[in-house]
Every structure is written in structure tokens, then in C-alpha cells.
Amino acid sequence: MISAGILITGNEVLSAKTKDTNGPFMGMHFRKAGISVRASMMCGDNEKDLLDCLNYLAEKCDIILMTGGLGPTSDDLTAEVVAKFFSLPLLFNQEAWDACVDFFIKSGRNSIPESNKKQAQLPKNCELIANKFGTACGFVTSGEKFGRKVTVYSLPGVPYEMEAMFLNYVLPNLVKNTINPMTLSWQVFNLGESFMQSAINQAETSLLHHFPNSTISYQAHPNYVTYSVSLYPTNLLQTEECQNYLKNNFIPEVQKSFGENILYSDEKKVAAFIIAKLLENKEKISFAETSCAGFLSKELSVLSSDESFFSGAIAVNNSYLTTNLLKIPENIFNKKYEDPLNYINYLASQTLLQTNADYCLAEFGFPQDNIVQKDYPFEGFYLAIAMSRDKLKSKPIIEEYLKNFLWDKQNSISGLDSVVFSYFLKYNKRHAREIQQLRAVLYLLCSFAKIIT
Image (cartoon, rainbow, N blue to C red; front, side, top):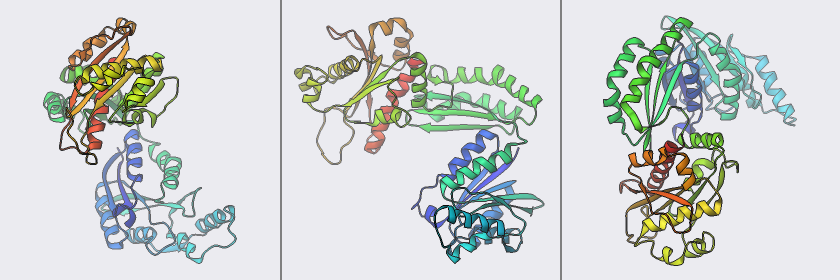
């Protein structure tokens, strides 16, 4: 299995003036391709520090991906550092210069600054990587380090330039002779990492004994954990062995260990999974929000808000909207603090009706407010899931699932053909307001993901 190291360079990323997206982008693709990332580093524009990083990575990795430092300015040091790392001279590369000139001409520029010639000063015998979106070619340099061959891929730091070059050249080059890893993922709700570790520990030990190069990952999100295992077969015979072990040994242990806390077996995040299931079932969803005012809608809308599954959302916080738009009786709104369960029941039921959706998710709560500081009747969120009576009859397992997670079935509102389940989620005062809102939204979405499977 190929081992890789990632080196992100630039004072701007080290000082957090620019957010690094290159490292996560490459790491994600390496993981899917079965290339093991041994280390990822970030370094400023300092020659000695860059050489130290390259030496550290070269001891551990077959290949090193280096981004940034290919520009025409004095702080762009990559070509010089890589040349020094491999004890190579810097030479003027005519092909790289021609590509730079061509980019300027196509951009409508008549003159080229003399400083751009620096971008054509590259290590001797390096292989160029074409850059369709910028002036700097990438390059590949190989040499003997620590008794074995090490290859450094040098790419621009600008994400859209780097991503195209990585996907079109680097990745295809690396995966030619690799077998894709076998990765399984489970989304586990309302069960902390420490409890999960205790429950699955014996099965993990056995897995690592049979396949020492396998990897296990716990990725924590608010209220759920993505649990993943990856196996890295090196030939077809080992691929079959991995498949059989996962099917007959490991998967049953995961199901036994995590039980009903498993939402689904897929690497998709919860929002993406919900969208996929709604489309598959030809069902629609709507949202009613108060204090989260958009957080719930955002979780889905950043992926898609197509009308084929999304009926709409409303953020309501005053009597005019609730009475005129949602047709909630004014006396119900006025007593929302004294009887929040009744209010969330109406809020979910009426939004379900007015949006003509199959399901409505609603929240009513009071996260900490550092702007308008006042006492509220409760510290947390009332959450609700509404659906028609016929929907519940067609999927009776819904009620069982929700009861397992302590959701309560509410009394039906007279004249409405809906059923509402509610849950009170107390917030943690140590969390910032945004985290309190996000936790409430994800608790609601996770609960819904369980019943839509």
C-alpha cells in the first residue's frame, strides 16, 4: 500500500488568514483510493522549516504532496526547497515558461512581468504537471532518500488550480496499480465514543489481528458518531478474504454492539441520507423553526432544496405569522410558555397541513441569548415530528423506533389528520448558542433518519 504525506505551505495558511482546504481534499481522495496518509503538516515560507518537514515526511512516506510556493514572489520557495532536498540544480525550464506565456496571451495580456520567469526555474529533470487555470506548472521530482525512492508532487496552493491538477494527473498516476480499499461506515445515534469503544473493543482487536493494516475511525458529530472501518487488500484473493471476514464476523458484531442506536449503514451524513430516502420513497418534508431560525433548513438546503422532496420551511416567532399563516389559534400562541408541548404540537401539525408535506419537523426553544438577556421558562428545545395518521398506520415501526429514543406521542388535535411525537432536549450551558442550536437540529434530524429507513 502506498504511503503519502501532505505538506501545506504558506504563511497565509499557517497564520489562519486563509483556510486550508487542500489538505482535506487530498486526504479524502487518498482514503477512497486506498492510499495511506501517514502525516499531514503545515509550514510557513521558511526554507529550513520546509526542508525539516520534507525530511520528516520522507522518512515515513513513499510520496509527498506539497502545495503552495510556486508563485513569482520572494516568499515562493517550493522549487528551491525541493531542488535542495534532492541535491539537484535549478534550471530554466522552457516548457514551463512557454506554458506561462501562453496563459498570459490567452488572458489578453500583452506584457509579462520579469518576475514570472521565476516560475520556470525548476529542479533538473523534473516532470511537469500542466496547469490550465494559472501561470505556475506543477512538477514531480524523485530521488533516493533514507535508502529508498521518494517522490514529491509540487502543486499550486490556489485550490481550484490544485484540485484540477490533482484529479487529472496526480491521483490517476497513483491509483493505476492499487486496489480500492473496502470501507464500511455506520451512523450511530445517541451513544458516545467511549461507550461504543467498550462495546466493540473485542471485535476491533480481532479485526486488527487478522488485518494489521486496517484502520478504524470514530468521527464525532453533535449527537451521533460516524463509525468506519477500512481494509486494504493487495490482491484479489485477499479482497475475497476481507469481504468474507466483514460479512461473517465483523458486521454481526457491530450490529450486536450498537443495536438500535445504528441509524443506518452508509458513509452519507444525516442530511444527505434523509434527502436520498425522501427521493426514494417519493415523500416530502417541511420545517417549522423558532429559535433555530434557519439552522434546520440549512442542513438540507446546502445540499439541495428541490421541490421533489422539500415542501418548504418557515421561521415563526410572533402571533401574526402563527395565526394568519399557520392558522394556529391565538390563545395557543399566547400560552406557549405555560404549555410548550401543546404549542409545538400545533406548530408541527399546522405546518404539515399548510405545506402539504408527508412529514414536518419542528422546534421551539430558547438557546442562550447574550444579546437580549432575559429569563425563559425552560432551558432547551421542544422538538416535534408530525405525519398523517395514514402514514403512521402504513409504517407502524415508526412509533416503536421513536419510543426507543424516549419520544412521546401527543394527543391529536381535534379536526386535524396528524400525529405528533415530541421530545425535550435540554441544552448544555457550556456550549455556545450556535452549538446548542446545531445539537437540537441534529437530534431532530437523527431521530427522523431512524424512522425513514
